[in-house]
Length: 87
Image 1 (spheres, rainbow, N blue to C red):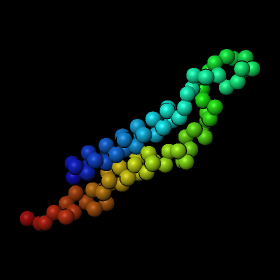
Image 2 (image 1 turned 60 degrees about the vertical axis):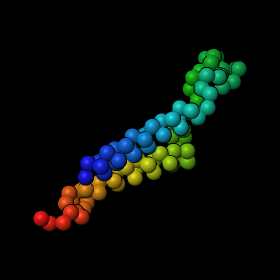
Image 3 (image 1 turned 60 degrees about the horizontal axis):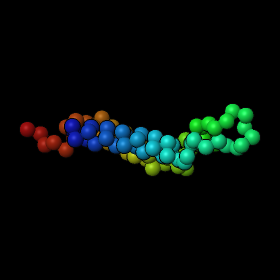
Image 4 (image 1 turned 90 degrees about the vertical axis):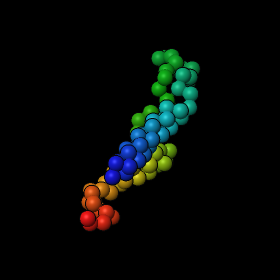
């Protein structure tokens, strides 16, 4: 049971890290959008908002998170003594 908890927690953490890295490393964020912008160079990406967190680019990370959650819930569904022979 401890092994499933550790594996599930690691999968959730890895999924979160994957989605964070996909968002951060989407592209260069230190260039201005256009030379006519009065605010000058900005660190905000063009795809700011919900589009940068869409399912299209983050589905592997979300799949890993869901898999980790399912593994964490296995002992709850099947009970702590599932598969253990009675004494």
